Length: 592
Image 1 (cartoon, one colour):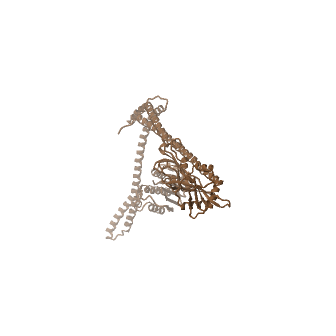
Image 2: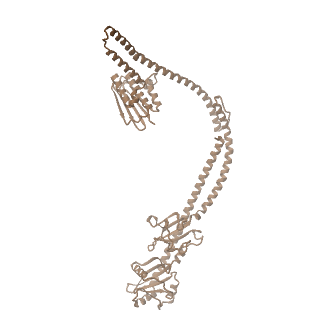
Image 3: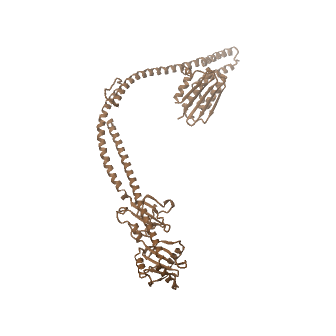
């Protein structure tokens, strides 16, 4: 495996930091610019959409106003009177012969209208087109009837959606013509072609605010176009738009989104209702995402170029400074190797008024302290080894005393009793009472069991921690005449942790022994509580109390053994006692 020097690591770290910084700044700048451009494009599309919507509303309002003026003219009322005086037995009959008394000014003004046709439907269902010299379109009687009924039901005017007449799309704007008796004498109809609407909506040049790919178009509830597409010809009532912008849910009437348009091209779209009470249309302004992002991509390329230049400059500076910085560190490294080989007298000679100089001074101080600590450590090791051996010797002496004072004496008594039985058997011809010998055997066995239990209680491995402590409390309570109350809270969850069980058992054993020997207590209690993460042990008595510091620091005292066992289990212990007020030991042992 290749070894990396500090110089290499400094260079790599500095370059990584510089690359990361450049990347973060570049990414932030790119996305910030991107969001700015997108928001600006949305605003531009919304502006175009609002302007065109206003122009459409103005166009229809002008048409309505012109219709109001025309239908109130004397010429129209005269023509209506002439039509209604004629008899008509055919529903919606077209009159192709021109009607006289139409003045030249009115006729010329009608011909110059931007509407394809204007016609009247009289009350007697006669239909007359202006000018009558132009062939009338083929419209069914049902269309005339629908137009007549819808106009009569309207308040002032009626505007129908696009329908195809002779293969071309037309709108029909109609209004009632009131006669002298205030009744409806006829209706006047403007047939509006798609040309004036396309003149407002269609963009065919890049200077109109929508660039080379932008367009604005109208959409009906059936998701069919109501204005010409910039990309498809004959799109009115033929091109279906099934995109997010074409949905008519109340929450989706208006908005700005990035989506795929009816061509499947990713676009920025701004859409809203046209807000014409008489036409359920939607107006949409869109531009290709690629064209809108051209400034962003130009900025991205500039950022990449600048980032590469900054990276090369940073790399050059880092290489130079890393060499200067790492040279004294290499000297420190050599001195560290000397100390690692056991030469605690190694020193470095670096004179610099910076952190490296302070590090060299600290290193020299550390070398001196290491030498002192090494000597202290050797002394502590010797002391610990001596303490270990002394402890083992004390334990051997205790076991020896146990065997000599109790078990040994019982065995000697057993031997003497046996010899006495043999002598009595010889004298009395085999008639000897061996009951005392059996009792002595039982006592010897009990003593051997007691010594064994002190070394390692069998009940702990056979029955577990709780029964073993309960038996220990009962036995010691019987021997000492001090009632010991034992209680358990929670579920024992250390059954598989033999080490914790043994240590807790020994702690309880040591605590009860101390109470019996030293406390002069009349009662004691032991409580064990199990939780998911800890075991809590509380030992209390009502004895004479003790000085915690003096007792724990005294040699051979059981409290020190308890404290050491708790520390081995990485637990915490609290000893509270006042003279004449009893004592309490609270222990907390973690399970994990």
